[in-house]
Amino acid sequence: MASYRTPLVLIGGFLGAGKTTLLRSLVTRLRSDGLDPHVILNDYGNAEIDASSLEMSRGRVTPIAGSCICCGSQAELIHALRRAPLQRHSAMLLEANGTADTTEIIELLTADRRVGRYTLPVQAAVVDAARWQRRDWNDRLERVQVQTARFVHLTRLAEVSPARRRAVEASIRTLAPRARFASVDEIAGAIRELSRLADSLPPRRFDTSNERVASAVSSASEHEARHHFSSLEVPFPDPVDEGALRKALSELSPEVLRIKGIVRLKGRDEPVYVQRTDRPGSLDFFPVRVNTELETLLVLIGVGLDARVTQPLTRFSHRRSP
Ligand SMILES: Nc1nc2c(ncn2[C@@H]2O[C@H](COP(=O)(O)OP(=O)(O)OP(=O)(O)O)[C@@H](O)[C@H]2O)c(=O)[nH]1
View 1 (cartoon, rainbow, N blue to C red):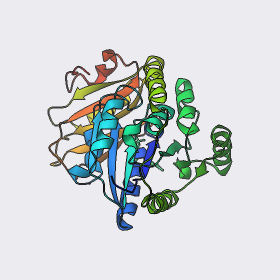
View 2 (cartoon, protein in one colour):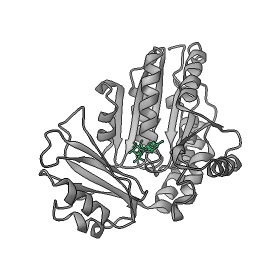
View 3 (cartoon, helix red, strand yellow):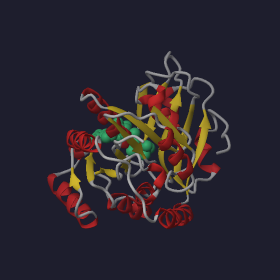
View 4 (spheres, rainbow, N blue to C red):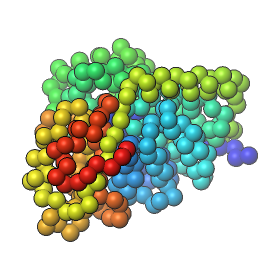
């Protein structure tokens, strides 16, 4: 049996907070330090899209699409962690989807003996400093997502005043008193250090794994019942006019918290990513650099979304079943 462990890092945080952006920066930094990171990426319909944006070779990234790894996709997560071809000087970076209850994932990764080749999980919570606790009925989930964090990475700091930043940090400290506010470099440094330490450790031992796993699984179904997040996929088979698409997206109901996907625009050769968070006016288009074969579709994410929300988009496409 191998006498080393692999650092296991969970990246969590609310929809659109900046998790994939952090992940991308960490991958670049770890690689330049000689570590060979693997990534597991969980998202609604389009984990493949984020996976391809990382520009990593296929064997190094495992997308888990569909439901949360904290509930419906726990078995897939364990399977992906077990089959990853790890060696020394590596790290496993696991991005939860933006609606996941990260405490459930931490519990699973701590208790399940099948992931004993990894270190205990270390969580980096990504928090949009401008939107922290301004998400109405999603504030509770956003708080839960920082509670088990070792590191908190604040994003969009350029958009907030020093007073707001202090207030956000104070509020997070009451929920996660032992967490450290950390930059990308500081998190990368901590992973490097963990990798150094884990390089001579035997696999973990477990005493009571079954009971704890059972409790993680049963509370996962409560999570599903409580949050009711859902996604709708809207295919865009033909090139669309950028102005018309921007207008239609601006007409979507505020129930749609996040939009991501790939479309083809009239007059442009390459496909483009489309991204919108729940921030007013946020809508980004940027070219797809790798894997241009991905299906062109947009994924809308929200709480209990109903097909009627796609109405402004029907002129481009017909909704496909989730
Ligand atoms: N202004 C600003 N934009 C940011 C920052 N971090 C991320 N973004 C942008 O926010 C959008 C969402 O970022 P992602 O990294 O995809 O967020 P995510 O948390 O992975 O999103 P989901 O996977 O959908 O939950 C992208 O357009 C990013 O470029 C930041 O610090 N400042």
